[in-house]
Each structure stands twice: as structure tokens, then as C-alpha cells.
View 1 (cartoon, helix red, strand yellow):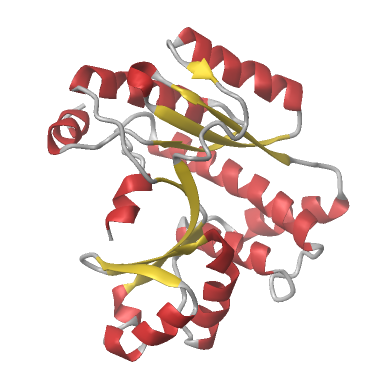
View 2 (cartoon, rainbow, N blue to C red; view 1 turned 45 degrees about the vertical axis):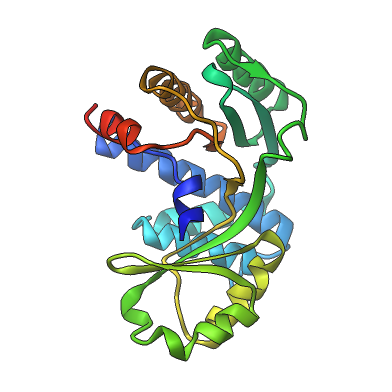
Length: 250
């Protein structure tokens, strides 16, 4: 499935593993908070959004105690995060879409604007990149759960699957954003447990750049991802073999 490759951000080897895990856990804690608030319940059986977040938490081996503490704090109402998005362009005219969860909108706006400005980027208005990025549902399912794709393929298509890609040991199922919930229910009916469920922004067209510009784009993405309010960063840079090889060497 080519779509998966379009939205996957290349992760370079940087920082300590423990620091990375801490950042991932922090993101999931915020997602738990939002899921509990928007879903109206701290019980995953009653809250599909929370169920999806907890499944992702399990996928990164987040401690059970940390998960339970996050749910408890969300139910207490002491912390509140809101979804904030930013759209703009980086070096070479590459489109950048930044998803945030923030408890202080003024701080987040100031930080994101500063990153764009200091790295030759331009912060645009919300909706300015709607023609470039589509939101999708993406489910990663261990291949061992589907020994014969023919047996479930039609069920997945009926639930909204737009594409099904087989990698070495996983199936990547892509849906429209609107069919995300429908696919969740279908996987439960089929007793298939995705190790990851998410709704990324997928670029529907890409921008060609040289290796030097690609490095600048990855640098600005790194800086964005170091900000505590940033959850995800998406780009429409075309990842050619030359660029992938150069970035993976660093």
C-alpha cells in the first residue's frame, strides 16, 4: 500500500531510547486525557476512542500503572488538553501539517510560529493545506492473525478498507477518516486486534526536493517533535531512494 509510505515520517537515530520512550508515553497520556473527555467515560468498553488509544499504549509497552493513572487524572478533570493544528511550508516549499494537544494555546502558538520563522518556514492559516492532506484511518495488524487474507478481505472492504498492504509480518489497512469507527467495529467482530490504530494526515501529492533540502525538512520536523505540545508532524516531501539513503546514513 503506497499510502502508508506517504504519511510515514522517516525517523532518524537521535537521542537516548529512554528519552524517546518518555516522549511517546507523554503523547499517549495526553491522548488518553482527550479520549476520556470526548468519549465521556474512562471505561474502554464504553469508549471506542479510549480503547484505540489504550491499544496503541499496549503496542509501545506502556506500563499498566501509568495508563491507569492517566485515566484517573482525566476523569478527575484536573487536566484539560485541546487539539490544535498548524499548517505551513518549510524549506523548498514542502507542506508541513503539525498536530498538537495543548493546555495553553498561547504558548503553543508562540512556539510553533517561532520554529517556522527560525527555520525559513512560513506559518499559514488553518485550512490552507486542505487540498494537500487527507485524513485517513490506518490499522496495523500482525500478519499471523490473518493466515488467509481471502477469508476476511471482503469483510474489510465492506467496512471501508480502501487499501490493504502486506509487509513482512504485518497487514496495513487504510480507510477514509469517516470509516475509522466502522473498521474498528469490524476488526472486533472478526476478532482481529490491531497493534496500532491512528488517523494520520496523508499527502495526496508530493513535492520533489534535493538531499540538502530534505535534511532541512527533517531538521525542522525534529525540532517540532521536541516540543511537548506536538503530537505528530506530516509532510508532503517525496522520499526518493536517494533521499532515504542519505537520511538513513545519518
